[in-house]
Length: 330
Image (cartoon, rainbow, N blue to C red; front, side, top):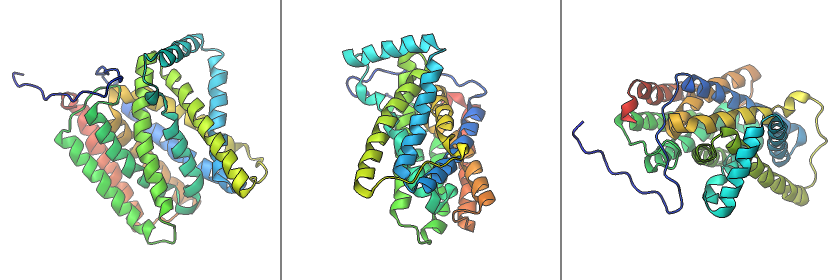
């Protein structure tokens, strides 16, 4: 109690200082469930991309349908509409830095990666590649205080958990690299993981500043849909139009799942911290992805992939579970 706390590095000029938050008891289980939904979304978007023979159009449809759902929800959410207008005024006046409002680009990268690579490398390998980028980014983002919960120092538990996570991912990837999958199909989900870590941080900041996580969710889908529609249009001009839209309604559920996943992450990034949120969602993603690959007979479920997935779950429990017992260490 008499020791001097370590100095917090200042944030760049123009970025408002966050306030520390406390996680409710249901936060970690909710994040795990969100991770399972993320794995299911990966499979759905990959199947839609396969039907269309166009991952860009599939990603645009997924994000666009999510935006439509949010706009419909706003009809019965007048407070969120007012808060959204206030946040837009802050953006225009410089009261909130606009780079922190671009979290939708992270989600767009993740959804695009689902459509382009999951069908070739499987949900499990896609997820563990995402984990590699997401874990390192979560650690850095928490350390510099970019997330809404402020600076979270590098305690031994957090560092050990992160090292275990990266090592587990390397083991899980080793079996997939031996396949004929091109290297860029592994690089894309890693980049998506980095983008997701940044997305969770800045969406949490938008939620904190605006007063409601749905404001961040709305902005996320506006930005992401715009980027993906432009990308899909350019892709269609270069390689041609996609196949006709499939009639299976289940293939269009990815957007609805994305709304829940992104809203949950925007709401929990502050109280949990970006790294702990990532670890909890990773637990669910691993459980869901391995189960989907096993049930569907897709992907490359080698012993290394399965063993790495199990160790990844253990790493998530080390970081997230121990932190829950020692909240002051964060």
